[in-house]
Length: 53
Image (cartoon, rainbow, N blue to C red; front, side):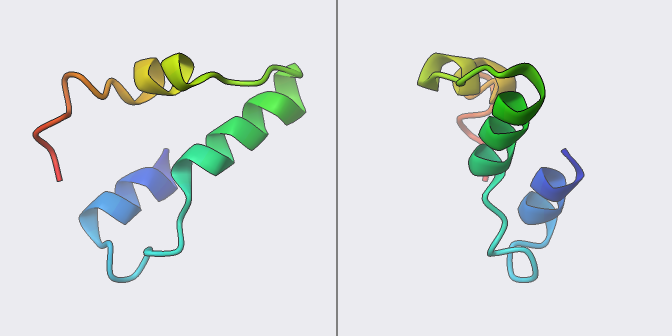
């Protein structure tokens, strides 16, 4: 989550951060679970944050 926030606050410095990839890898490695697109929508609360940059 820290890298995600950093990429939102200072995108010029953290432009290489791939939050979704990191989250999916974490869930696969630690829980043996493949996240779906709906899972990522829920985690990032995309509907509530759709106006955010």
